[in-house]
Length: 255
Ligand code: A2H
Image 1 (tube, rainbow, N blue to C red):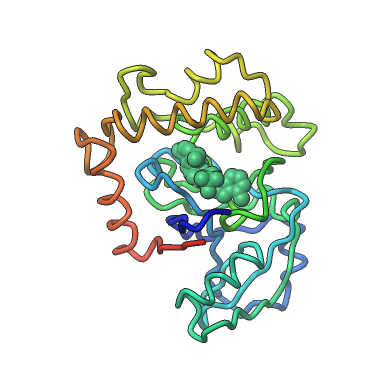
Image 2 (image 1 turned 120 degrees about the vertical axis):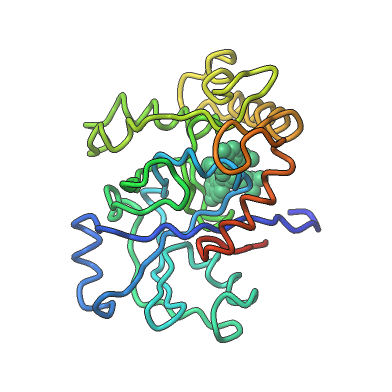
């Protein structure tokens, strides 16, 4: 790691209904009516309109951390510790863990994704390539603009039975969010096809796609949806982030 700080937007995805295995584990560990949030860390807050699901690493461990009396976060322990030194928990360096689950226990959990066109909620789904050494180990899925996310949803849809998920959890409509001169309105799909990326494990090619998508979107992209439609992405990024923060749906997280 370098000396610079990576500034993420941490988003709050409120649990509407737990998957059965997680529900069992959490029984009796949370107060009645507690609000629990999955906390994905993103570098692209301006794309949050297009969230179609949210990823966890199926074999990673996640803590449920108490932030306030009625508020709990789901993320890696490493991220909770970092947050506790950033004023996100009320007491400096303290991040009370009330329970622990594995990513796979949460698969199928229904969460509310702020700003997403899918206001009915989105599902927690597995992504094998999520690392617990980066961000919060929770990744919100925007298949229009992230090649990793696009490759993963295609793979999940193909092997829904193998992954033990329902097809309709993964096959949500992908809406255009950003228009770019080189790749159009579905940058991720375009790059995955152009570079002939076959699976989420094509890491070399995905790295290249990610780089290209990020540069093109950031420097040449224009918003085609939301309150900042018509504005360049460089401007919209900050505006959307501020809007999310004002609404209490996001906060800054650095590492
Ligand atoms: B980004 P950097 Cl639309 N493991 O958010 C794997 N990937 C992770 C992660 C983890 N533990 N934590 C965060 N990420 C992803 C949106 C997005 C992202 C779009 C396009 C590109 C993109 C929606 N997913 O990232 O290594 C998150 O996905 C490509 C740069 O810290 C986060 O932003 O630079 C990004 O990787 C952080 O990557």
